[in-house]
Length: 186
Image (tube, rainbow, N blue to C red):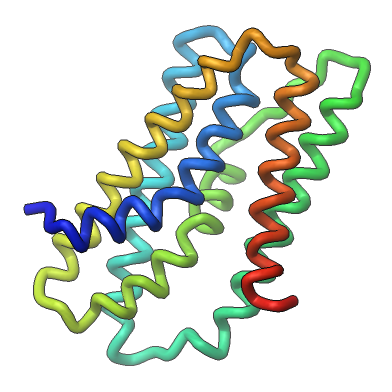
C-alpha cells in the first residue's frame, strides 16, 4: 500500500505541520492530561485530514486549474498567519498574568489549512498518476502519525519555564513565516 515515493512525499509534506504541532504541544503543557490528549488528537486529526484533502483536491483539480498565478498570494497569507500567531504567543510570554492561549476548533482549522497549502501543489503533480486518492490517504495518515509524535514530544521539555517555552514557540512561528517569505522572495 505505501510506496517509498509516497512515504517520502508524505514525510516531507508533514514536516511543517509537525513543527506547528510541536509548538502547539508546547502551548498545551499546563493542561490536564486528558485535555492534552484530547487536543493532541484534534491537532493531529485536523492536520492529517487537511493534508489528505489538499493532496486529493490538488490531484483532482490538477487537470483543470493552474495554481501558479495564485501560489504567491497563498504563501503570503500563510506567512502572515504564522507571524501573527508568533506575535500573539510572544506577547503572552511577556505577560505577568497567567494568560492561557486558547486554541479552539476554528483557529486549528485555519492552521491546518495554512500548513497544507504545499500539499495542494503536490497533489497537482500526482494528479496524473494512477491511485492518486490512495496516495492522498497515505499522505494524510503519515501526517497524522508525524504530527502526533511531534505534539507529544513537546512533553519532554515540560521542565523548562513556561515563558521561555512560549518564546521558543513564537520564534518557531516567526521562522516558519519568515522562511515562506524568503522562499518566495517577498
